[in-house]
Length: 256
Image 1: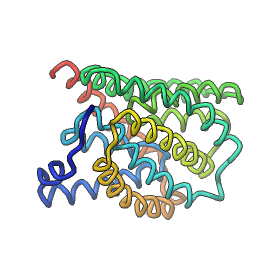
Image 2: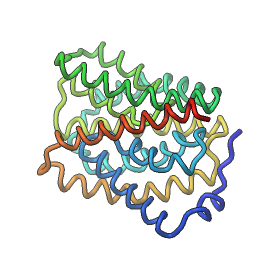
Image 3: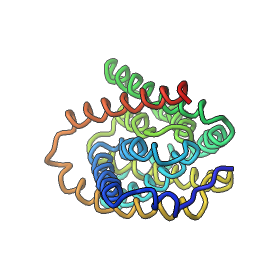
Image 4: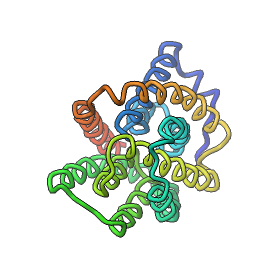
């Protein structure tokens, strides 16, 4: 069982590093607030040098929960509740399977899964966009199973969820609001599962919630600018970051 020592984590950080960490938490929540994904991935790559890999996804799950809970509030009038609950219900048991896999494999396998999964999401997203994929309720359910499984194993599964909702005909604020509803429920499932698996103790919850508080302000800022800022350039930048993060994770898988 991995342990997370809050004192050891914070004492190893300088004041400048703490400020940078909080800044990137704010930045990551704005990123996810604008595009609907990328927040947990961005912050996860940042803190990965400081946190054991077994704790990376559990810790980011706390941040993602806080970020999406606040975003869900700001976009509450745009949520498609029926579709959101449909996807959340189908994905939940698969999220538990994903977290069980995460807890049971070696660190090297996890690094490889994190890196390969990040790269694969970008490839799949690009392919679906290229062919202009359209899916029905059944297809949305299949995508929900895939999303649930990978959400317990890798960073940045929201990119797949965003693609699925878009392919089902959702646009604009409706995607972001519905994505936040699904992610909040998915995060709760993951947090409970990680807790039972011994990968999320009280110290990890404290640091995750502390970072998550910053995410509330990020979501507020994102809501203010989302209608004025195009996301095309932002999406390209996030995809570059994901690819770089994937390379780093795969390198660690073979270097450690």
